[in-house]
Amino acid sequence: MNLNNSNLISIVCASYNSKNYITETINSVLNQDYKNWELLIIDDCSTDDTFQIVESKAKNDHRIKTFRNITNSGSGFSRNIGIKNAKGNYLTFIDSDDLWDSNFLSTSLNFQIVNGYCFSFASYRRLNEDLVEILSPFIVPEKVSYKDMLKTGSISCLTAFINIKQLGKNYMPQIRKRQDYVFFLSYLKQIDYAYGIKNVLASYRIRKNSISRNKFDAMKYIWIVYRDNEKLSLLNSLFLMLIYSCNGLKKYYFNRKK
Image (cartoon, rainbow, N blue to C red; front, side, top):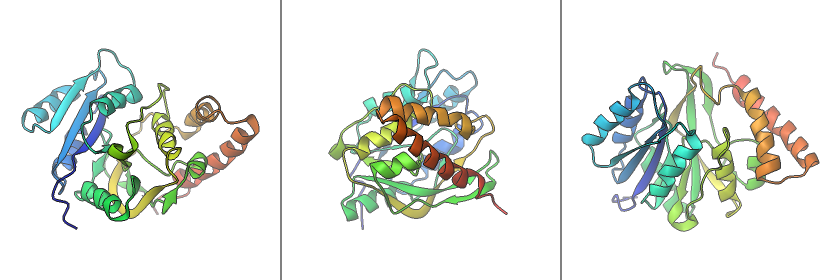
């Protein structure tokens, strides 16, 4: 299918102290075979040279737009600035240390147009800081409902692709972790399913100091999501927490590369 670059895709990138990786991330966007995009980079008061690198890239490509927070405010706050300023029909995210394959945008857009979907997500590799594969690729399910998502985080910010012309703009809550999880749940309340692309289309870099790396610590934020954001009962939250924990162990600890 010839997409003709007819749909503007808004790409939101929250950045913080990523000088060692941000150039590779931006290049993976520049190398997309689909060209009608805008990249909104929101720097969260980096103390290294991240913002200077971003500004330099923006001077050479009008599609790159930069923002900088007045104070360090977290990834959810930064992404919301990007969402607010997005002008595209479609919305997607890339963190400042992750990478897309060159056909990520075209494949995701084509997948939605051909099938009439408005929310999709794709499989991805899991690498260390040096881009060495340390876990088997995460292959996504064919589709995910709201109830499915409560049991395991199958949708990642790295490959989520949303038709905001059809679904509208939702925003992330101001909690320290799992803002994207609540964000995806909010869309899954509007539609029956988000649909998975089995092809591996991106690379997720697992950094030693990543805020999401300590999965056990992050579980308390899942509890906050269940109880405070989703208003689930105590018993239902306990049941879901058990399932989510088991799925998390399988996802991150039982799929090590040989």
